[in-house]
Image 1 (cartoon, rainbow, N blue to C red):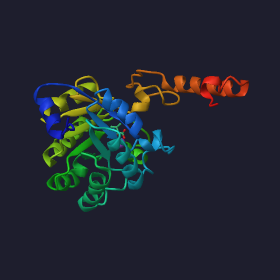
Image 2 (image 1 turned 180 degrees about the vertical axis):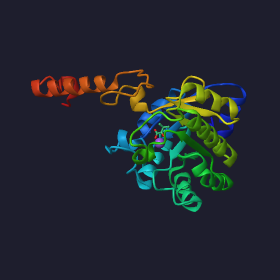
Image 3 (image 1 turned 120 degrees about the vertical axis):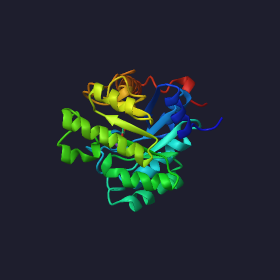
Length: 266
Ligand code: KIV
Ligand code: NA
């Protein structure tokens, strides 16, 4: 059984099939999702918030991306693994983008990379695609620009912003991207983008009409602390379960109930 490829992803749009994508940052969690049949996993720079304890994705480095991407590749057999290019790893231009994407392909073994930006990143996408590296684009809310956005506002509201989003989506398709993430975009606009592109759209906070949907796994599984964004649906309460397990273990140790005879050697 071979890995899913970007060609399978293109074929899914032709057949009108929707597909799910989750983030993953380690081998063990990735193996769970792989065995659950998740066809595409993103080693997102959201690892900055989820895994590394940063306040945004901005500080994430290529070393961190490479290390965790390699772990996710090792933990999976079937899924297409997409590695995010972190902030500062492609903004200098196409040659820098190619150097860093090549690292994720060769050193981590990912099958594709993702980078943020529409028209502004088209030259980078073109060179990567020419070099044989499949690229997933990402438009709408692009979290690496948090300092410019001043937060994480919904994008594409108003006629001018909607036209820009459509131009951005077309630009990444023309540059050769195999798919494009639409983040925090009004549902109607995301539907229009999806209809007007031949490559699949991957929505996050972009309504029901995208070709695929992605969520950060810790949000999806109820592991994230505190409030989650409105677009998140929680399919488990892992934070509660794991906390309960830790408290029960602590109580057993303090009270002497663990280890019992069956956990001991004689
Ligand atoms: O880093 C990430 O998790 C992402 C997804 C939210 C699309 O870019
Ligand atoms: Na990201």
